[in-house]
Structure formats: structure tokens, C-alpha cells
Length: 404
Image 1: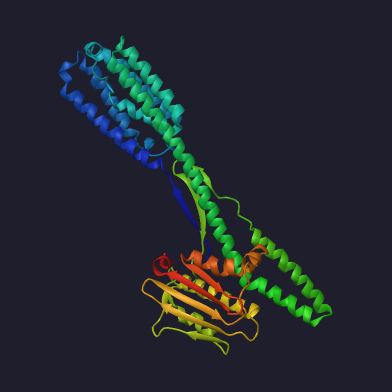
Image 2: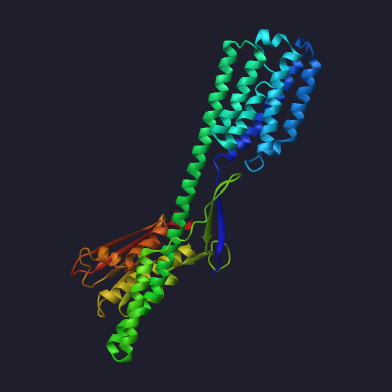
């Protein structure tokens, strides 16, 4: 079965970079139009025109720099902020009345884009540094700042620090979520391996132990060794070894989780569909009665295989625990929204607390081979047992979740 690595990227800040790119372009256009409309109000319009031309060329040329954190380097941030500060300080030279009338500076609201780049790149501390320099430049440019100037400076300072803090919280949340997904993926992989081991290796070791003990002699020693290996393997499977995390942090793309998918061997990524009846029919025999619908019970191939394996695990429990003379019945029900398979036997039943005890001992037949498989399919496994009246296992698989 081919193994394939699937990369899941999670980035809360990437939309912020796209928004910043749009903001810089829109504010550039707005400032240029504002100058074109009010050009006659400037004493030295050539100074304003020269700066705005340089600012517009810089904005368009550096659009890739604000497409992500990896490209937004410290050198770019310093030059970008220096350009904004230069524009603020050049305002009185282009129009001396700007100080008296408390008008907008040459870069205007474009300056906020330079500060926001600091906030998104480095968090609230970087934002505080950039907004403080902008505040100083505005105060120097005004000479005697008015209430509106102080209000605007304070607004930029608080807003940029708040956005930087939100970005830091978002990054921490991404790392936590990515780690949780990695642990969940590792746990599911461990449970899948535990089911496979239970259905094959552990049962073979248990059979070797029983047969060796019954035969005696050298076979008994072999059975004893098989029993020791069975206990060791059950302990390993029950405790689990969570693989080392593949979580890493990519500043430009956010947190990254690498998961391992195992697609089915058959054609197509989803493996096609299969009639569940064809997988369950081989279980029918002299002591197992199989009741099926008249029409095919079609499920995605991986879901059908997992459901059939759960049924097989239930029948193994019947053979091992209900006695050689016990009978079992398999009933398949095909409903529009779900498939229900019921496995019932006429054995002695399961004593209260026995399942919890078996799971604590590392015996994962019900916990993993049955309930674990159904949980991975989005379904449920309900077990009802009355001492002296047998055991019934009802397996339900919703069609919508099984197809996903």
C-alpha cells in the first residue's frame, strides 16, 4: 500500500499580508489623486510631485515584498519606514501652510501601511517602534502639534500595537492547533497499527502459546516464549509510541503539519466502491448465519474494508470467548443514510467490567479493532451483553461520513 505525505498549511496572518498589499496600493492611488486635485494649494508642487512619484514607484516595485513574511525583510521595512518619515518631514517644504492649517502630510494615510508591515512581521514590539518614529516625525513636522495631530498619532500607535499583538496571538494559536492535529494524526496512525497487530500478530502469538502449552515438551517452551512476546507487544501497543512531531513553523505560510495518508491499492484515489456483502459472505458457515439485503450494499472501498474487519474482529471474539459450540448471526441493514451491521451470538455473555479490564491489560479487540475502526469511519459501535444471554454488537456507519 503506497504511503503518501500530505502537507496541511494553516496561516492566519497570510490574509493580513494580502490585505496590506491592497491597502498600500489603494492609499497610494488616493494620495496621488488628492495631490492632483489640490496641486494649486502647494507652494512648491514640484517637491510634492517628486516625492509622490518616488513613493508610487516604490510601492509598485515592492508589492512582492509585502506578499508574505519571508519576503518582507528587515532592510525593506527600514527603507519603507524611512520613505514615509521623509515624506512627513518634507511636507512643510512643499507647503508651509500645512503646519498652520493642520493639513495632511505628503504620504498621508499611506504611512499607516509601513507601520502595519512592522506589526504583521514582528508583532506588537516592532509596531510600537515604527509607530513611535512616525509620531515623532509628525510632531516635528507640525512644530506645535494640535489636538487633531495628537489624536491621529495616538490612533496609529494604539491600532498598530493592537494588530501586532493579535498577530502574535494568532501565531501561537496556529502552533497549538498544528501540534494538536499532529498528535491526533499520530494517535490515529498508532491505533490503526494496533488494530492490524491485534488482527494478525497478537492472535498468532496467542494461538502459539495455547497450542504449545497443550502439546508440552519443547513446544511448551516455544509457547512460553510466544506468551512473553505477546505480553510485551500488547504493552507496547497499549502504551503507544507517538512519532516525533513533524510540526514546523514557516513564517511565510504559517504552521505546517505533515500527515501520512495511505490510499487504497485499487485504481483511483478513493479506491472506488464495493459491495459490503461480498466481504461479509465468507464468514457464513455452519455456526455463522449471514442475513443480507437483496440489493448490493455499496460503500467506499476503504470504509467497506474497515467495517468488514470490525465484523471479523467481533466474530473472532465469539470464537475465542463464547465457546466452540456458540452460534453467531450477522445481519446487514442498508438504510438511505447509514449502513448497520449487527453481530449477535448465543454465548455466555460478557461479565460487567470485563471490557475495561481487558483494555487496561492491553487486549484491544473491542477498543481498537471494533470501536476504533468505527470511530475512524465516523460511525458508532454499540455492545450489549447480558450474562447467560449472549452478546450483540451493532455497527453503524453514516454514508456521508464514510464517503469522506
